Length: 213
Image (cartoon, rainbow, N blue to C red; front, side, top):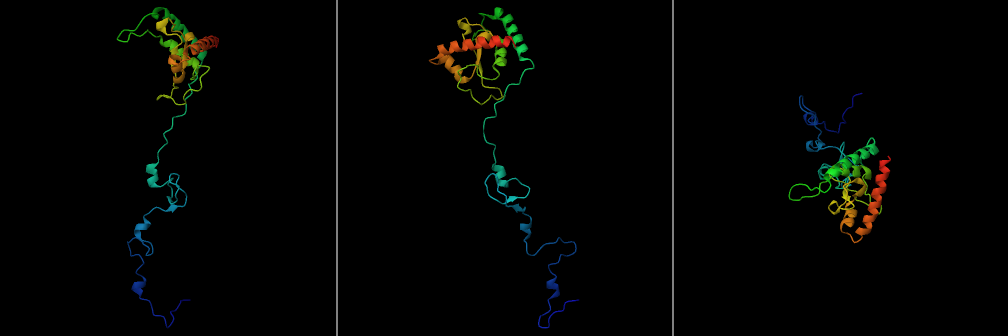
């Protein structure tokens, strides 16, 4: 049934009452919501993980401003463990054999140039790095750094227990891999002579064990 207007109620002005209806070809707009506010993204009440405040836009993990300010914390990367060799015992023995073949020809010789350092055998150093498994070979090491080098390798320094210039051999049985702290103690620490004996025994034991692997 069609509703009728009460006698005491004035009839509405038809053009004014229909003014809010969209015209043909025009976009529909609501008179109660400003157009500028309708363009804003709808925000939820979930907290922003950066600032902790609510009002994060739907579909966004955080505020736009917090997104720009978010930074990854500057922490050292996790310590990379050395990749296991398919047969490290075989590789160790191969490197030791190559070092022994070169030792007779290189012992006592020095490199050309201004430094004139003793000639080093690269295979001997590689063998020690395989043997150490990425850890300091000092049995008394208080703990090497957890940080790594730019290429993800452990911070280790291969050193001769007795310097080549003083008559030491460039051979894995007389070389050790040390962390920077233990290397400094072995080089200039007050207990370096006692540590030298400990390292010499550790190098001999590890070398003998790896020859049997």
